[in-house]
Image (cartoon, rainbow, N blue to C red):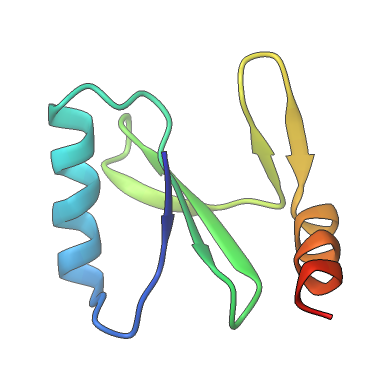
Length: 76
């Protein structure tokens, strides 16, 4: 699950959403901010978000730099 931050997403609301995603069975939760080009992953162990540079799935990984580069191409 990839959650794109919006202007309405406060930190408490984001945490509430992530906890709900876990409750309904989501195993991987990534949060991205396309404006600042930052990303985080929700950690069930720490009940918190952790900044990441690579989005890792069980069999694939995607460096954020490549994602932002592709986004720029699509928007050009």
